[in-house]
Amino acid sequence: MDIERSEVIRVTSSEDVVRIRQLVREWAIRSGFNLVEQTKIVTGASEIARNTVNHGGGGTLLVEAVNNGSRRGIRLTFEDKGPGIADLELAMKDGYSTGGGLGLGLGGAKRLSNEFEISSRPGEGTRVRMTRWK
Amino acid sequence: MERIPILKMGEFLLVTIQVDMHDRLALALQDDLTQRIVDTSARGVLIDISALDVVDSFIGRTLGNIAAMSRILDAETVVVGMRPAVAITLVELGLPLHGVRTALDVEKGMGLLRKAVAGRRPGDGYRAQ
Amino acid sequence: MSKLPDVLKRREAGILTEWLRELKQSAGLRGLPPNLEETCRAFLVQLAQASRNGNLTDIGKPEWNEMRHLLEELSVSRARQGDTPSETAGFVFSLKQPLFAAIRDEAKNIEEMAGETWMASRLLDSLGLYTTEVHQKGREDIIQRQQAEMMELSTPVVRLWEGILALPLIGTLDSERTQTVMESLLEKIVETGAAIAIIDITGVPTVDTLVAQHLLKTVAAARLMGADCIISGIRPQIAQTIVHLGVGLGDVITKASMADAFSLALKRSGYSLIRHQPENA
Image 1 (spheres, chains in turn cyan, green, brown):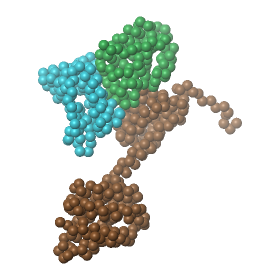
Image 2: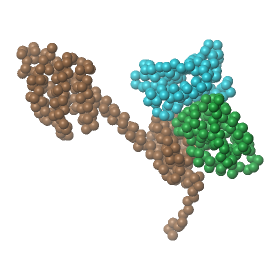
Image 3: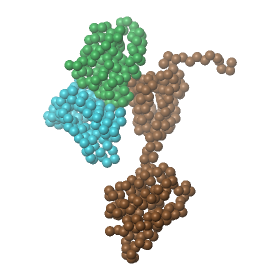
Image 4: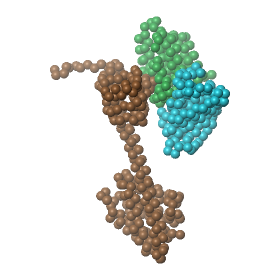
């Protein structure tokens, strides 16, 4: 897989979440995604960015325009050094929430991407990587 | 802090969301709207989201909460102008917003509000749904 | 250093005449393509130019850029006329005989002749094969374009009445097509301000789980936008499949026929149908 371009952004406040939505939209447009796909990518990014701010105590987002030879895509990697998630399987379930929400963040973001990886260790932080292909 | 303006039109309140809302702004709108419903004894709330190109689970949930809260306060809520891409994404996200009335545009939304308000019997404020 | 550029320069007119004769002789039923002479002349000019700059074994080199460009245009236009790849490559290969004849006449000795002929043969082979490659790619593009056109043709969203849209689906629905169709339906709802859309699946032979889910998601998305969908024309087998697959249709409105759906849509929009004169009166 080739990485065509990349950029790292801070994710620390709820204003950053809005900024990330706008930035990811621009990246999705430049990679040639149609309107529905753009919206799915941006919405997925918004979900995870919020988690990074609210549960991870802030972190970073790495945006990459990628290419696997035949298809172009966008890969988003969110990383934080927060408390981590003890039970990943439970956290991925719809309706599971510690933040008082509906608990659609992780499961929803997974449904909005083609590839979704999450790794987390209690006390060390969480990393979420999602990719969407054209 | 910036606030989203709420307009009063007769017995209805009209909100047009024109900025990409961060979470605190969405919560502020929820506070302001419920307060204004009580202050003005509004019978209906119309929220125009045609300018929004993203509605994630937090904003979606806030819209649902506003609808549920205003129902308790005896006002109907109609959300109008959701874009197709946003609607498809919300469904994919798993947030079909059952319990929120919707209409294609402000005019149709107003019609729906009038019909809903006219159809309600007095004292029929809260109905479990 | 190859003598090919010199041969081409000195013998250009003769080679061209012979080549055209060759092409006319082997022309098929469709006859000769337009601008044949022009194309041949341009080809010879490029061949002379590129071979003067050196590399005769690798046409991927930059000095062959213009030649490749010429061959690309040729292949694309021939593909459009319906030529087969071998017919297009044959255009290049038919230059061999006149070119070899010219090399033979110009060669000082037999070694030189053999060497130059071998070189020219290999060069024309790779140029001919290149047209085949481009031809194939051109065909693929045509197929893709036609697929896209068919996709559009197969999504006819029609306005039945003020505020009522219909989407008659015909043929097998795969999940990609369903998605495209549904997106265009939702766009049309915004465009026309129609509050009711009828999705008619009378012409759809089978529905699998994925397609059924797409249909349901569309209905849910339309509702979020403020429009209602009615699904009509569900065949008995499809009804059975849906139940067996365990896909809950939930609170989706379904009607057996498009006529039933339309009549419901009219009623919901506040219209009523009245027959003024009884039939056979």
